[in-house]
Amino acid sequence: MSSIDLLTALSPLDGRYGSKLEALRDIFSEYGLIKRRVAVEAAWLEALCDTPAVTDARPLTDAEKDWLRELTENFSLEDARRVKAIEATTNHDVKAVEYFIKERIAQTSLADLSEFVHFACTSEDINNLAHALMLRDGMLVLRKEQDRLTDALAVLARDNRAASMLARTHGQPASPTTLGKELAVFVARLRRQAAQIDAVVITAKMNGAVGNFNAHVAAYPDVEWETVADRVISGRFRLCRNKLTTQIEPHDYIAELFDAIARWNTVLLDLDRDFWSYISLGYLGQKTVKGEVGSSTMPHKVNPIDFENSEGNLGLANAVLEHLARKLPVSRMQRDLTDSTALRNMGVGIGYSLLACLSTLKGLGKITLNSARLNEDLDTAWEVLAEPVQTVMRKLGKENPYEQLKTLTRGKQIDADGMRRFIQDLDIPETDKQRLLSLSPATYTGIADKLVDNIM
Image: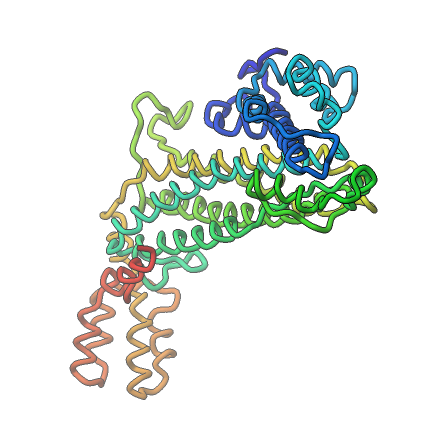
């Protein structure tokens, strides 16, 4: 197939959700991989020619350097198709890239340097760098949307910092909080996990068939090959060279990165479920969209579909990411090939992560606060004031304060009059009594609104 119809795509990432993931298409597709392989091969050729001790190469002119860089920058879908046509004969994807470059330079001034394309390289020298570049570029897309979501959540937290809400521990009414403070908790958690993602160092290697520069030294024993590799990995691509590897870069950093993304995703999944619950309780409403329906038979339905969609896709994302994090760092002896096919699914894990992020972000944009419902729940839960009452009694040394309030409230619904009568009958100082009498479930929120300042 020269193109994929949305209705015949095997994966929903390329079908139903394809339009939402356009930004990842040129990164994690096979086209994206081939393009970055070409970039690595071109950078290596340039580095060899810039090394005087590689005596059989020659310095490149500025025009030749520009031509090599344009080969990558202007790499087209037709170019990728040509590589695939060559691969049909070679049955080797990286060798096909080498032959493609040699084919392109054959009619240029670079023709005399043809055999320095892929010189002393193993396929993994090219692949691991290409994968590193894919992940670097892909993370720019994902992290941008993650931060957009977190920032939108922070705005909701600040706007609702004083919106009193009945907390629910174990699903039961508990000491009141504010909606803003609860959302601020997620802002802090997401930011912390984002920092863990950003802290991962992307590493790469360019040291030959088993990581020892064997062929390099055989050809040019006086070259400082580690320095040449550094010029490509650190100098050109701004990555960190892994100095000790087998044939492959061990993929430990990929495991670290995918585990970090999975943790961010897990926090988002927790957020999705809480929003679902708040919507179910009626604390939050959702703006309706003209033309949309929530049920094929129940016209009144406005379902929390964005949060449900996000939750479902987060499960898929983490299943892929966590599998890759467990699988990729394990390779028999100096290498086996099981990582090759697994790595082709990096974009699947990142794609589902991005899709989930976008779904939650869309859901946040529809949220409305139902203050009346919040207040209604608070006003039917005066039993939650058992906590401050027994705490004041404790500080004053009263006998069995917890037990007294347990008898009054456990498993019972207490109204305002019942709680205030209990407080009025207490033999405690008037200042403490008045402080307790002034409380209501809506005002018993501690410093919840102030805590929101921690995310600013």
